[in-house]
Image 1 (cartoon, rainbow, N blue to C red):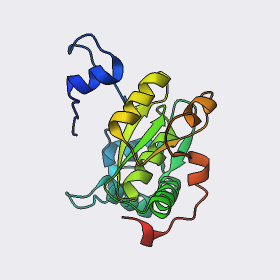
Image 2 (image 1 turned 90 degrees about the horizontal axis):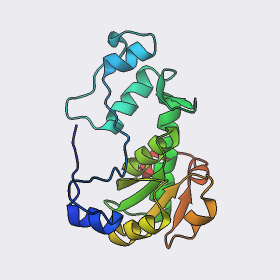
Image 3 (image 1 turned 60 degrees about the vertical axis):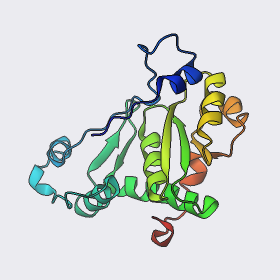
Length: 193
C-alpha cells in the first residue's frame, strides 16, 4: 500500500493549520483487501479466486474478480448499500466511459467529493478507467476549504453525488458531474484506458 504525504505548506493553505504536527485527512477511506479476505466475506474459500499477475492494477483485480465471481459482494458501506463485482465493474466502467466521452483527456486530476460509501468507490474506479487520477475530498469539508482546494488542485471536473449540500456544491467554480448522470451511460470498452 502506498501512503501519500502532502507538503505542510499546501495543507496550511487548504486548512489554515496552525502547525505541521496537525494533519488533514482528505480521504479516510483505506482499502486493504486480499483474495482470501474477500472470499471469506462471501462465504467462499480463497481458492475461489485466481490471482491476476503480480503487477496487476486494481482494475485488473476488479475485472478478474467480476469474471470469476460476478455475484459475490465486492463493496458495502455503513448504510447497507452493496455492489457485487459485476455491478461494481459495470458502474465504474460507465463512469469511466462518461468521463472519457465528455472530457477526452488522460492523466488529469478529477476531484471526487464524497463520504466513505459505495458511490465514492464507483466514482474513484471510474476516474481510473478513464485514464485519469482522482483527488478524494470529504464532502463535509467547509465550503471555503473546498474552494481553496479547487483553486490549488485545478481539477478537470468535480464528481459528486447528491446530498444536503446540493446548492453549495453547484456554487463551486467547477464542472460538477453527478453520480446518477454518470452511471446512466452504457460502458464502452473502447473508450476506456
